Amino acid sequence: MDTIFYTYQEFYTHTKAIAYLLMVAALIGIACFWKFLSGKDDADQDRTL
Amino acid sequence: MSATTSRGSQTWFTPFNVITSAIIIVGLVITFLRFTKGLGAVTHLSHDNPWGLWISFDLLVGVALAAGGYVTSAAVYLFGLRKYHSAVRPAVLTGFLGYALVVFALHYDVGRPWRLPYPFIMQQGTTSLLFEVAACVALYLTVLFLEFVPAALEWLGLKRVRDLITRLTLALTILGVVLSTLHQSSLGALFLIAPSKLHPLWYSPYLPVYFFVSSIIAGLSMVIFESTLSHHYFADKMDQTHLDEKEGVTLGFGKAASLVLAGYFFIKLMGVAGGDNWRLLGTSYGLWFLVEMIGFIALPAFLYAVGVRNKDLPLIKWTALWTIIGIVLNRLTVGLIAFNWQLPPSRRYFPHWMEIAISIFIVTVGIVVFKFIVTRMPIFYEHPEYKDAH
Image (cartoon, rainbow over all chains, first blue to last red; front, side, top):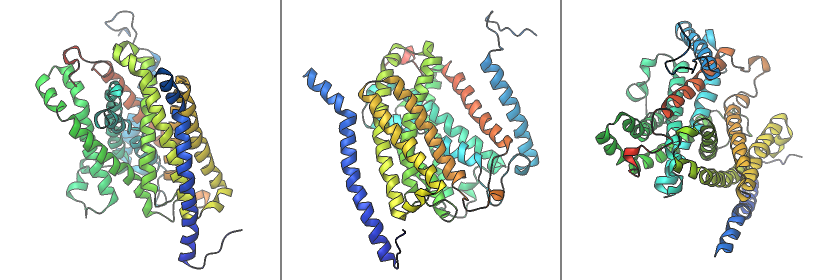
């Protein structure tokens, strides 16, 4: 069911709340993705040291 | 007249020459029709749809795919990644031809080529986004020309002029990045003035950011794709340095593209959240949006990452092609598919076959000029007289 907003205040409180949650997910997600992306490089470097 | 050239057994009637000649002849005929009979004779443009395929494909896609020039120059000259140096000249050439063809293609839409300087001498004010686009494209095309011209000067043997221009490399690179940032984003900003025409899933106040970030992805992917084709067709023109650095360029650019795609995925989600458009994901346009998000952003980000981790070069190359298709679809969606989405089907736009033919003609001209230049000038190799001179 659609959420009904009566004021811009309600609309922005709702959308900003979701945006902040997404930002937290992005920060964690990008960090994990970077680990996945360069994981083998780090392992190769450790092996050569 | 004999069809054989002075080189003996080599015939002019190669599949490449025959196909490109046919396309160019058709293109010239349609060009004549366009400039003598007007837009109505060769396009399906209307007051509802004043921008069609020539803007969406030739301009929006052309500019995005020409981003390899500033991305590679910035990586090498600003971030000091000298190991990618061999990729600079091919990327700058692709960028220069891309922009030159964008300006060439714009003539078909605008008409009256002699009025090309009007944005600078006749415009009503400097607050128009179109003014910014015109100024940035004109300036950046000049920058790309100056970045490319040392190769032509080496070919012509004009050493002193070449040395003078080469000294400007750092300044030109900085200018190139600044101008590209401005106008890649301002092409997205053009659509900010049409919130009621562009579907809410693609309309967002972040559109300029989307266009700029996706141009970085397009540039990185185009360098990989162009390098793959060049190594296939022009390997005999390449020196050992170019051949040796190929794997590093593919892996490095693949890794960068993967990370930027992951970031792009999240900022696209922010756009949906900002407009509270989640409910629209269940519609037919929503399905198309999900195809773009999952199939052309998340999937290539993952495939690039797997390719880089496993040093799987074929996977990275195929992913580059897939990503380019995704960028093309994104620009066509913003400019055509999701634009005027509320109009009834009878008033929607579908390009005339002659519009498609002109777009193919312009791409073909680009390929022919690229081939002409790389078979003559030091693009894939260092000129023997200028070894380590740049």
